[in-house]
Amino acid sequence: MDPVVVKAFVSLLGVYPVGTCVVLDTMELGIVERVNPVPDMGARPIVRSISDRTGQVQFPGKSVDLADRTLDGRYARSVIKVVEAERLGIRVGDYFV
Image (cartoon, rainbow, N blue to C red):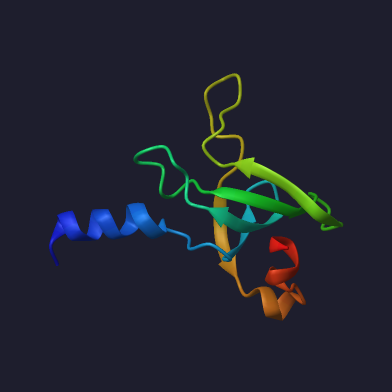
């Protein structure tokens, strides 16, 4: 594959497409809202956090930028895995109204 084409494709869609349900390292559940507009941040999308650290659902949730850093320079949140929203009883469309 042509690396230039792959990079262009990832910058358009991001590593995590819009609507993808993810688990963050804070143990929050999130739904990808949009690709991060910052160049080279395709793996750090804007995510709607839909649960707190204990798993308590937060509707409609809050928008968080996975490129945000803590005071010591570490990323505040990161994706640790992708999950199937349907298996968790989450209707992704409900968060995009």
